[in-house]
Length: 440
Image (cartoon, rainbow, N blue to C red; front, side, top):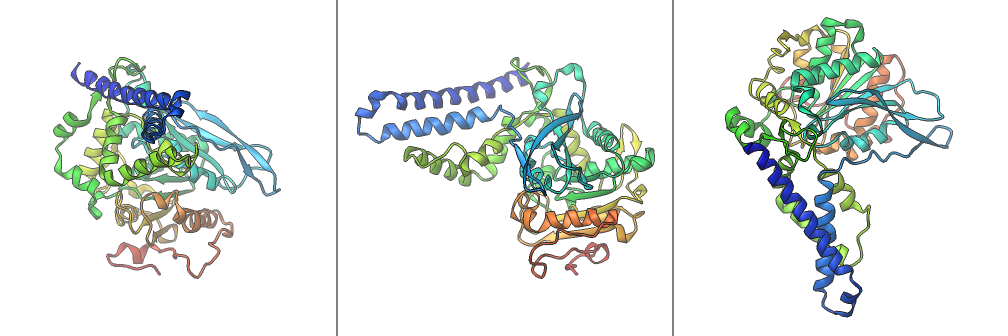
């Protein structure tokens, strides 16, 4: 009962702050307040507007908001979202661009299950849609899943990925971002042994912790300092009475959000202070840069407790993937069984979440894969977000990913960066596996 009451106490605090913000905003909206020259009233109303919006967004799943894509014919083509596979903990959805011929490139984007919804990849999806047919893993909020649906840990996550890949066929190109990188690798190895004909055509791994010990970050340091017992005691709670998943053990989204914000508290405090002043002066917009970012950033989802704990224990502490000792429901998964799937590793030089080397470790594990099917790229100056959704992704990494897909399919690459001389070059496996290697 204790963890459930703690969960409801956090939700009570959230609702209270949302109510206080709405009340302050309403006070400032009374016509009578216009008779008072004190600017404090405008500031209070502005504080209320920002506060109400911020705390309200924390329990809302953002919309994909992809109305249309411009086709090769110069016309806008409406994008419809279709559910291809529906499961209790996550669906496989497709973004179908209506009224255009199907593109030869077929991409499955594997979204992280790390506190935010799959909509975190919205800009990534939008950038791929003009040139690809795109599917994405749409993970569900654990607080909305009844206890009767059972457990969901890293084994189940891996099996979900394997099923989604098998559903889409052997010409699918998997692009995994951040947290699912090691499990996408494991799912491919699982298929290599169980159903070789269902393996994907290519596997692109972007900034994920295949070997967390390759280079330390605050994330890996935390995993080393805290025991599993301490971790379970500190972060795992039971979903409260208000939600369909009442009683389910979860790592609450609100608790995750508090952790995210504490890592850069000064930056977030300044961002909200500046936004309050912009609202007070009438300079803010409903979809301005601040709201566009924080509407997504503040929308958090609960993870099942068993998924979070098994990820920490098996990926970070025991390093099951890095040691090629991973298993799915007791069945060993041998990464060296991958012999036909071309693998492309992408890292950011300034990534402080999954540091350079952590994702690159995948190439060492692929002992059965020929060198010509391996590639790696280190993006200079890029942070974690930039390698899949920022400027680095748009200008350099996305073209490289599409060219890699085309090369493996026997098509000539046609998406090189505009200024190829200044573009970071792709690194081949032999030089990059060695420490201190530089791009060639």
